[in-house]
Image (tube, rainbow, N blue to C red; front, side, top):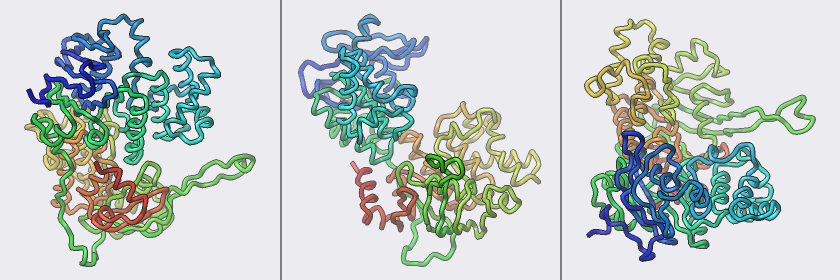
Amino acid sequence: MRATDPMSPASSSSSTPLLSVRDLHVRFGQKEVVHGVSFDIAAGEKLALVGESGSGKTITALSLLRLAGEAELSGQAMFNGRDLLALSEREMRGVRGGDIAMIFQEPMTALNPLMTIGEQIAEVLQLKQALTKQQARDQAIELLASTGIPEPARRAAAFPHQLSGGQRQRAMISMALASKPKLLLADEPTTALDVTLRGQILDLLSDLQRQTGMAVLLITHDLVLVRRFADRVAVMERGLLVEQGAVESVFKHPQHAYTQRLIGSTPVRDVIEVNESVPVTDFAAQVSDLNVSYPVPLAGIKGWFSKGHFDAVKHASFVIPAAQTLGVVGESGSGKSTLAQAMLGLLPFVGEMEISKQHWQQPAQRNTAHNKALRRQVQVVFQDPFSSLSPRLTVEEIVGEGLKVHASQLTEDQRRERVSKMLADVGLTEEQFPGLLSRYPHEFSGGQRQRLAIARALIVEPQVLVLDEPTSALDVTIQQQVLGLLQRLQKEHQLSYLLITHDVAVVRAMAHNVIVMKDGEVLEGGSVREVLDAPRHPYTQKLVAAAQV
């Protein structure tokens, strides 16, 4: 029987696994969402449970701790000689946060906003290790220090909102490790983090795992992280465990069609290449010495009479040639989203900005006739299609809304005809979705909602499309489909894209040129080949290295 046979759980480190799951079924009412899953984890082993949204990987992990709400569980989950599914609730309280700890996907929602970080870690230590209040406080600071948080004593006194995303995730790890667990369940622990922070968190988990000897179950959809972190991998599709085995074996020789599709879902470059030696004369946008500042309160008595300012974008200059894509990469706080908002005329700015040979009338937010006409030329596709589409409007109303503003002369029938044509152009038709125009966003998948968002942006025939992390909220196979759609639309409509992203692979697939931002400044820029294949700035080198397996 092959090592990648899903019905053949393997344990590479011990003949007696630390955790042995057999024939796990999870049902909510009449709907079964996990179908007979079986796998082992040995002491000190790192197993990755991978799959797209809805595959059942998170509910599988939550079921092990009996945190799946009203779910009906059956099967067996033997941990240290005890069946987790058969323990009483009182016995499970001793297991949760003790022998088995969990790191949740979004630390901001998992941490208590009313308690300091130190208090939350100390609470675990007092409950699980019976330490005194002072001992728990001292130990909490030591745990924060062990995860690499600078000034751990000061950070222990901070509330969650006062820490960065990476620091909050490190605090969550400190809390999980407080009881010295034998098994750590890490549910998408790096999804909300920038690419360099993802690598740091994984390296931290690996170091701590080696030091403590704990086993780790990593739940993720990021295959790059799996190759970098795990010993073995188990692949889930629609509640079924379809394949498992050693990471290198599964990645090099995937047996199941779904695994093959996941591994093959890397962004593919399919753009009209340009001759870099030929000077460009036709520009969709030109920006020179762009500065964007926000007012901030001053400390002390000065704050009573005046305000300071924070420079979010400093002296940025770039061009976007017609029918080409400029990628803007950088970590959170680099200024790339502020740059996008300035391009859209949503923020006041200082400097020169020309879009389709026109300038914003300052302040750019003024809805003058000139600015209104320019807004038609530059549209946007946001990161999360679910939150950017009104749940109260139908598809026809969402996609056709721009026509009411920018093509008010159209009749209702003409508007409906254009909406249907645009939806078909992005791959949504009445044949696929009966009653398409009268449907609401919640009736579509994430990828389909992003197609609606693209249709809404293109319906007014813009010249420039701002793409703000357009695929980061999507699964890898859907991401590939949406990128392919954007590449096709660029060719057919001669569109120019300003692509905001932290994903170097997406930039390689989509962009002709790229600029790298940090702390509001453009550190370097040029063609994709120049910047990503031979980065000059140390920060760019770090970004590129973090994106590689």
